[in-house]
Structures are given as structure tokens and as C-alpha cells.
Image (cartoon, rainbow over all chains, first blue to last red; front, side):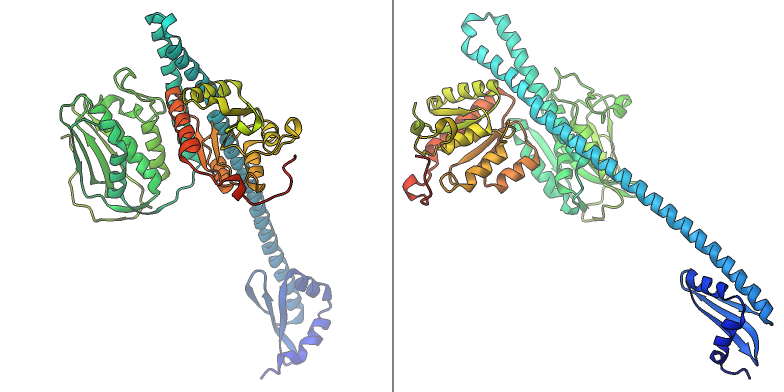
Length: 347
Length: 157
């Protein structure tokens, strides 16, 4: 039977004749180098490397071989160490890159914030002056202006007003881009109710048949999603203006297994061939004379939906109304308290 | 119009904005009691009787209309100075500005602004806003009498 290992340990370490290797291994992070000695003959070298978390067991039948084994182990360990060093170097490089990109992104965000601050503050001022003084001219000096001059002044006023609205809408959209989502459990029916109530002024005196179905409760940024409903419903109200009896419906369907919300109206609709243009900034399918608007509402809605990881699309036919669909991502868990409905067709 | 008749201190650097606001105030019949300060420093000099106003007795206007973006001392700094001095701390301050930036709004409310209004581009709307402001802060609203304000150090007299 072999004697206790530790009895021979000191003599092995010294007798090895290569103390440099041993100390090198210890310096490299080997926690322990234990010789296994049986009856005065080294039979194995146990090397426990902390850094690599690997236990090497080298079996040797002589001291000479043990030396070779130790050299081999050292080489192996060095290789591993080099690889680990390279890896951590790469990680460090990546970290630097990430930090750089983050800084760039932050700078870009700051710049865009500063830009919108300037646009919001400095561009609105001259507009206010244009609008203000042309209005004062019309109010106070109308006696010395003929009707054409008065009309022209009105155009100046209207132009300034429009540009003010454009700036506001663009700024609002820019803000959405920079804004962090604040998801919380949201009852979509409440959002729709609020959005409809806010629209009241826009449909005063008109007959609208509102059909608001059971909508799910989902996790989403309620302020932003309410904006989506506000924009879609405002469009629905606007484009059903010529209908004697307007009908606006909000409901849910399932598309590709995902809960999908739709807003449908029986208004003017549009040519489906141009559907892809609907969501572009400043893109409009109707002239400003026919239907007022800045062409930012749907772009904003799309931005919000995309931010939620969802998608938005529309189906329509000229004079037969339009239906807008949107989903709010797989991440937005929904509790299905909604009534089951089938896929949408044109009503 | 003497210092102690001033009802509104209007702090605004843009001459055209001043003109428009005066027209709007005029139509609301309060224009004769407005003092215009063209930057934050002028506003503080007026309020705290310094510089060109040194020697005039302290008098608190009923309302300060304050723009945000001002040369030298900006709107938030003026607001802070007003809120810090016990003589002026309770004067209603309404921010009237082009900006609807959240951080301006947050900072203003943190400094206890009484109201924050973004100047509407449309003049009719602007006119209505100014009229409501004048009506509310000069007629409807009540502020404590100067005698009930906490006693402080000299008013520069």
C-alpha cells in the first residue's frame, strides 16, 4: 500500500530538479500540484488549476516522465490562459465598442432633443408673429383693405397655423422616438372610451353609430396606445364626414394567432393600391382641401405600434370605408376577455 | 405710470412678441399697467429695486408673465430668484413661452410656478389665452396683502 502522499511531497518538489516549472505553474494560477508517490516512486501528478477550473491528473511511472507531464501541463495551461486572455481582450474591445456606440447614441439623442427644442421654441416664434400681425391687420385695418387683400391675409394666417400644427405634430412624433416605453396592464376599452370622449368636438352635431366591442386587457404603454386609438378614430371621424349615418367600429380579431385590434369606418376609404403610402410622414391620400390634416397621424400611430413590436396595416376600398388593424407584439401579453370574433371583411 | 402702479411684470426679450402681447392685453384692457423687462436681469432689477430702479420702494406686481428663453438671466433663474426672496415668493408667476419641453415644464413646476402656458401660434387663440390670464390673475384671483407677508430686510429704500 502506498504511504501517505504528503510525506513525500516536499522531497518531490525539490527533487524534481526543475523548481522553475513548479513556481511558474503556481504563478499561472495552479492552486495545487500534488505528486502521487507510491513506495518512493512517483506514479501521478495531480494539478488543480483554479483559473481553468480543470483538474488535470497526469499519470507517470517515473520522475522523468513526471517532468514531461508537468511541462505538457504547463504548455496546455499556457494555451488555455492565452485563449482566455484573448477572449477577455475581445470582451474588453467589445465593451469599449459598446461604450462608444452608447455614447454616440446618447449624443445623437441629445442632439435630436436639442434640435426639437430649437424647432419647438425658435421656429414657432416667427410663425406666431406672422399669424399675429396678419390677424391684427385683418381685424384693425380691414376698412383700408379690399376683399382680395383680406383673402390673402387670411391665407397668410392659415399658412402659419398649418405650419404650427406641422411643427407640433413632428415634434410629438420625434418625442415618441426618444421616449422609453412604460408598459403596464391596460384595459383597451378604457383607452378607446377616453379617446372617443376626447374627440367629441370633432363630431359634434353628427350622427355616428359607435360600435365598441370587447377589447382585451394587455400590457402596453397606455399613453402611447391611447394616441394610436386617438389618431385612428380621429381619421375615422374625419373620413366619414360625408356619410349621413357614419358607422365606426372598434373590435378585436385574431390574425396569425395574434390578438389584433381593428378600427373600421364606412367613410371615403382609399384605393388599396396606395395602402403602403399611408404610414409615411407627410403622405396623404386625400388633398388638404378635401380633408384637412398634416399627414403625421398614421406615421405616429405606426411608430408607436412598431415600438411595441407590433404591426399596423389597412384594408380599404374607395367609397366603402377603411379598416385599420394593429397588433401589439408577442411581448404584450393579453388576457382574452374579449368576445371571439372572426377575421374582418368589409362591412 | 409709476413703479407702484404696475400690475403685470412682463419679461420677454422678443420685441414682436411684446407687441403682440400688448395688443392682446390692450384688447383685454389691462395694457396700461404692464412693465416690460427685456431680459431676466432687467426683471430682477425691477422686482428688487436694483440698478435703474434703485431707490424706488419695493412693490410687488399682481402677476409676473415670464418667458423661458431669455438673455443673461433665463426664465427659470428669474423664477428661482422670485421664489427665494420672501417678499416676492408669493407673487403669481405664469410662464408664457414658446416651448412645451417637458424639462422646462418640470423645472418650472418644481420651482412652484402658478401656471405654464405655451404661446399658441394662432393669434385668436393667443388673444383668448391672454384675456383669460388677465381676467383670472388680476380680477378673480386673490393674493395676500403685502402687510401679511413675512417681514424682511430692507426693500432698497
